Length: 194
Image 1 (spheres, rainbow, N blue to C red):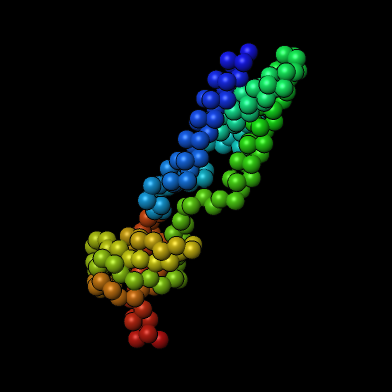
Image 2: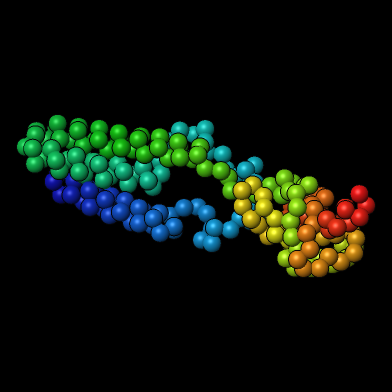
């Protein structure tokens, strides 16, 4: 039985260390490596809904690793304390299952703290930005603007129904004609008309 405890502790602990190192260097999360947001990300409606299924919430790589690690370590500790084998197995199983539930609970709590990361371009209507790549006249092509939206600075495709807007001009977003495109007009036009 000691060999089983040792293997569980070594394999589970090793995977746990790898997960922690990957998380620290930024490779353990679900976000893009460059941290960029994309307007074409999946909507929440397209994601599979496993939240109501208790089994899928409980059984994940992190919870299985936690079970294995604590099962092995508790079993070894009980063997070194020279406890009876039945008691050792019971304590090891209880520790493993407890660690599994604790990690599942903590992961659930952490998921409530995270935002989806999806930028809703509709929220840009009325906001001001700056042309990054010229915007061709009368919807004849797309340019790009930079805009602050939802606490971050992003680049978006942009079109205009008026004259061409050169690089560096301050613009106001007037509409969101597509999920990845904003319609803009120069702020100078607003001042001239106002």
